[in-house]
Amino acid sequence: GTNIDGLLDVLLLVADMEKEKIVANPERRALGTVIESHVDSGSGPVATVLVQSGTLRVGDTLSVHDTLFGRVRAMRNWLGTDIQEATPSTPAKIIGWKMAPTIGDIMEVPSPDTALKRIKSTDSSHRATEEIAAMKHKQTSGESTDAHEEKHYLNLVIRCDVLGSLEAILGMLDKLHHDQVGVKIVQKGLGNITDVDISTAEATGSMVIGFNVHPTTSAEALARDTKVEIRSYQVIYKLFEDIVAMLQKMLPSETVVTELGTFGVLKNFRKLDHGWIVGGRVKKGVIIPGAKVRLSREGEYIGEGKVDTLQLGRAELKKATEGQEIGLDYRGKIKPEDGDVFEIYKEEIIL
Image (cartoon, rainbow, N blue to C red; front, side, top):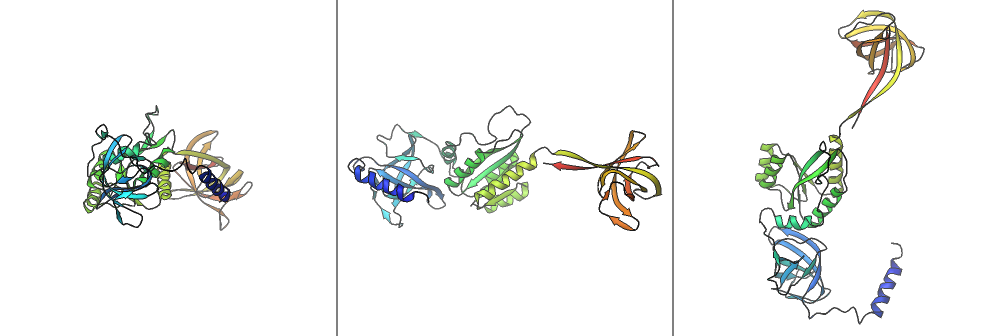
């Protein structure tokens, strides 16, 4: 909220001083900016355009990036009322697109329209929509052909309700960079999750991500049969956090060994089913239940095991420190003898 009043003052001042130069021409061919875009189940691709110059009329040809995007079949104003034309500064919801444009795209009524490029679209997958969505995201995380052959990828099939959400998700995934793991977008599109998405996910080992969309009944059944995982989200940041967590699980694990202390065996008391009860003294550091043991005899390692429990008299200990004489429940295959040394350590797996 800082300096908003000052910004408004400058805008009003510029508008007042330059009012003769910044007036739009309503007589020219229409030009405007796409401010909202989605695929409606009944009307197909729908986009709201803010007309900035010229007048847009029902029947006009629509172009974006010198590509034919359709023809205006109907227009509605912000109240939902049908209108026949939209003059400068008018936001108009347009029906008649062959594919949904990208938010921020510049729409123009071309002249002539014969030179426009044409993109083939399919009703089921809106592949043309996907192509346009990808224009701003040429290379999502994991799609780069880098030299890391051992890099592991999380394959995703993404379906969203509107193009703005798809762009936001792709934009966030663009920011994921790691030498060992990455995200690969196998397929993306708008509308509910279909059988085609499930089949693609099965063939590529992908997970299906849905944002504000649902699988069709047949797609849900097919996913159960093929064991394809479908995850649905309503919050983009939750989706992003889950993907990061999945990538972390894919990272090769690293085992960190921490040396805790040493224990000198003074007496082997008795045999147990899983090992022995031994008595001795903590020579250095600490010993805790659950820690691992390297058994050494006369300076050579002869076996490994685990500390089950610690006991001082009749009391069970949670930790034994240097100098204490204790009893120790040792799990292992090699019988400890008087004079043996236990090297006590713990292992942690860091993902």
